[in-house]
Length: 191
Image (cartoon, rainbow, N blue to C red; front, side, top):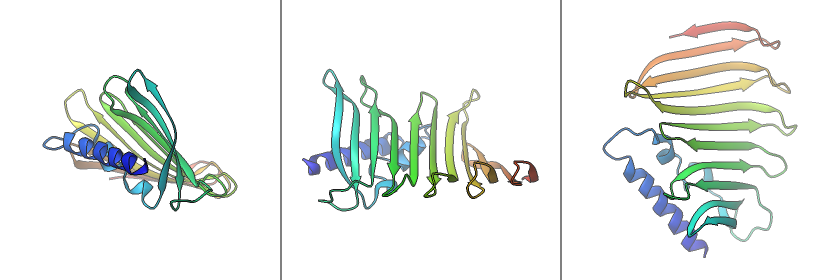
């Protein structure tokens, strides 16, 4: 059963990758972060449940384990599919043994995608955030923003912010900001 699930996930990953061949696509991140992508390396997935709409699977939830045969899950991933096309529309992953260490969220829309990773400390404070958003512009160009924020220890106040902006694969802007502990900008550079 597990082998069949893994084969299905690998086949779905190949389909996403092949659908992007030969053109720049809005769902670029979906191919780069596929169901068997690096976020899940070293984790064994065990299907907990799935929801079907008619014959099509519309939702699946997996527990993640460090090793096959482990009893204690170290995370879970939820996959949401378009009930008509079977395309992956969204997934979320949460990882952590004793506390929530990391949350991954991916959503695909008709002309855009959003992807984020949030990292937490043992007290539940956000320590770092990474994101990548893509969109097809009204001008037909492909836009991508990728960035990272860090936070002051024990606080939700941003410490540093960096974002790279791309148009059709060419970087056209980098914004870097630093903040004090009260949330005031102390430095801002746009290149």
